[in-house]
Amino acid sequence: MSFRINCPECDTVFEPPPGVWKALCPFCGRSMEVPHSHADIDPSQFRKRFRKPPGWLIRLQNHLPVWANSALVFSSILIALSVSMQAWMVTHSDHSAILMDRAIQQYKSLNPASDELDVVKSCDRMIELWAIDSARLKAESMGLTEPEIRKIRREQARKSWKKRIERLSGSKTLDALEGYSKLLDESVNDSDLKDLTEVSRNLWRTARDNSIQKTLDQCQAQMQANQPQESLKSLMEVEKFQLQNLEGVPSAADTEPRFATLVQALAKWRGMSVQLMMTESNFTKSDKASEQILPVIEKNGLAKGYLFPRFTVATHQDLFLKSALFRFDLQVSERYGRGFEETPHRTTLIEVRMNLIRDGQSIWNQAATTRTPRIPAKTAMGMSRLQLSKQSDERIERKLNEAAWESLPKPLNQSLQLLEGAGSWPDR
Image 1 (cartoon, one colour):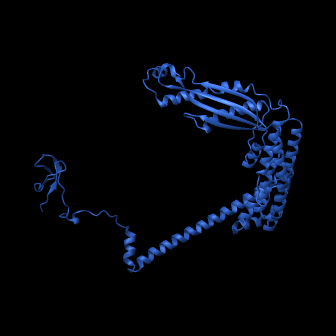
Image 2: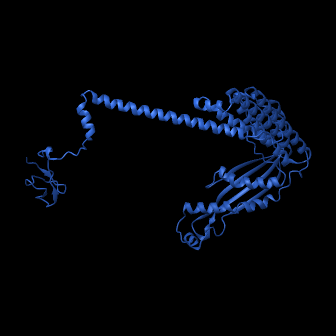
């Protein structure tokens, strides 16, 4: 049968000569393979490679009726499954008995001075294996009964629980709260400790409320002893206790008014709120300027006796800032300066005007100024590239701006050294 092939090189369709495996394209001369059909091949010429069944199976099949072949195979499968299941059951039964023997030996190796939790774990393991017949028979052969094991487990669990309660009474407050919370979880999930759930909850509530009251008393005493920093730390610790939550235990509402009163008193004594405003800006936003300036303000302010709170709850933070005696206003100006080294790139000039206000009146003013340093480039090659530029480049001017902000803390610290201490202002 004749057929045509398509040349992949020049897309010419031609008919190759009969009986060849390769042909040349009459147009471009490319050599290509000629496909052949195997329809004329006799499959009987190929030798079938099937393994012959063993002779005993052939003789058995010849002596059995036709219907018996499938029945024989099905029966063989059932026998194999039955033998496997029996072997698994025997092995599993023996393994359970071995595990029970190990659990009993571990239980008997414990002495009266051992930890109660180790006894509870051993009892739990034996109770878990008691549902298996071989394990139960093994335990009964050694003189143990399930009610006896459960009784021992209950006694040791309650004994361990009460010992941990006694240890928590002398630990730190936050550690005690965490420990009482764990004991509460155990009493909820353990049937032998169910009746102790309410006891755990009451102990947790008592520990938290007592800690709050004790810390509030400590804060008040520190304020009377003229210790503002320690007083603020005590209030922030009280807030940590207030944020401790436990399901089914309401917050101590009676302590919130006293806490708010001490927050206001501390703010009206040494508190300071900082307000920053950008009057001019080229590259820097207010939040970025705050990250650069506020840490320097707070560091110097704390050294002078002013208080900057860091309460977690937003209402507590707002209450302190609104009640603060001092307000520190910052006006930040960021503008272009002269060209850098007689190049078209403009430097940055930063000016921070500081104004301390008390009771609506300004009591202290100062300003800090900085500009791009003379050589912001770190290498001679970088410096030469700046000097050889023919026109201004925003990327370079941003680098000059960053260099100016990096040099700001030094003049800012120098100006803040002139700030009077929080306790040096006369009372009004």
